[in-house]
Image (spheres, rainbow, N blue to C red):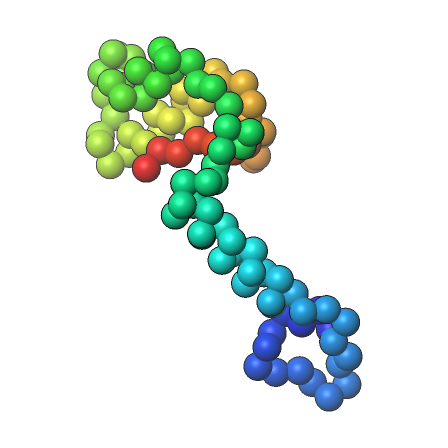
Length: 102
């Protein structure tokens, strides 16, 4: 009915939209803009306090030992609790947009 699948449509279903094409186009545009460094832009980001960034880069200065394999997840969530511009999801603050811990 929504055109989510391109390979099969039951005889009794009328297609009212082509969402598969729209979704594909959206992902292609997203991929292109990321590869060309057009996304995220300034309007999709927010500034981060330099001391918070310093803490992420040097966790030993926090006085807490976290193994390297777990640092990005555990320490980031602890530090992000201090940053405005986040939403709560299942008790955790998550960034709205424009921040990456790759």
